Length: 270
Image 1 (spheres, rainbow, N blue to C red):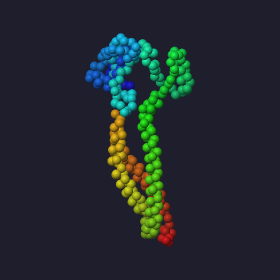
Image 2 (cartoon, rainbow, N blue to C red):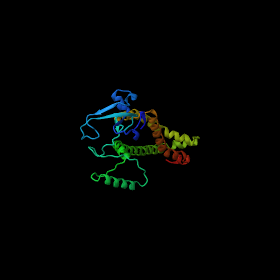
Image 3 (tube, rainbow, N blue to C red):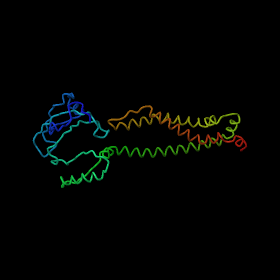
Image 4 (cartoon, one colour):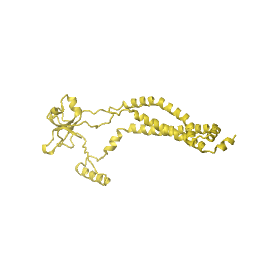
């Protein structure tokens, strides 16, 4: 978190009733970031201790740069960070955020649970990891990714089987033509290009038809995110090149066999 103006919390100032707010909160209040520092906020009901009825006055000591503390489906909303030292258990469930080393993690958690039980025996100890909580925010997207990945691989596999069968059929029907061309001096690369170009033309046509559909579907899907990436042209270009490469490698398997075969044998066969 980067402080853009003012300061963060400090033990030197005993920041019991101090507030650090984000830029979104400053914009919501309609003031400049420099004006925010020193602003007093009155809470009619202490939000840190809901059981207390007296008013509390908080002073803004700094403004932090906007950062995502929710899913990217949401815009960065106003945020007020408060350093509360008065009551750890009054009115709300106690929560501590701790940065841990991955070394001897289980032993560290056991030690934390022991300390927790000593100080708060009436409250059960429960721990969660931030990366797991963050991943849960995108569980739907992760499940969708897995489903699309599986079906994409199946689609590519089936398409390759179809191309392989068509290439084998084409080579079989043009065996004598290939033999004559080789006798007349056609190179192996020329034969491969001859047999592959018709298939690659169809793949290029498929790419041209599929690209606008894919762009529209991706654009509509990205609308659910408040913060989203842009769809650059090179993403579709890479996908098209990969499709051509897969098709060419699939067809080349049969084309190379036909190109290196003995032309005399192909001309003798009936």
